[in-house]
Length: 207
Ligand SMILES: [Zn+2]
Ligand SMILES: [Zn+2]
Image 1 (tube, helix red, strand yellow):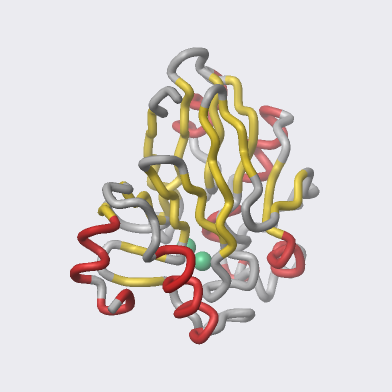
Image 2 (cartoon, helix red, strand yellow):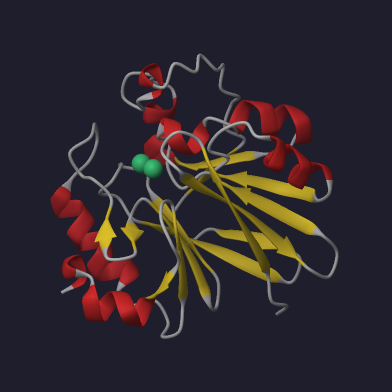
């Protein structure tokens, strides 16, 4: 399995991390959380063949660039089943507060726990991690996890927004995050990278 190249773009008013994940063998790539329209993102999509647009969850600060990138690439947009309602509701997904009146494209592939996203020789596996939102997911390869707003370096995402549940979050952390393979590098939805050992050692929500 080839190693994936990962490029982070920090976009939008909430400094959301958008990731371009590239199979270095043939420049095929996926975009994770196109947070806001940006020339950097447009250029990334111009120079790679975008196989999928993957959403870790449907909050406005993670989907603000979906419409423009979908239009540019024609690539399928993927979201977990349990965030479809949030995606369609500008009040619940907070996009009414961002001032961006975007007509969102439809969801082309509905994700479920344990689904596989193929990228060249690599596989990104979906782990359903409800808590921050009902349909939050993390995307996991052999040595990397994209954790959206489920896990940050030293912290976790809010659970007091529409559809959030602190109890579900704790269960998700316990059953879907703490058991990531040792050495897994964490790429969160906000803030710097970390790794799973450090989080298990120091993140108060993983104790
Ligand atoms: Zn969020
Ligand atoms: Zn966020």
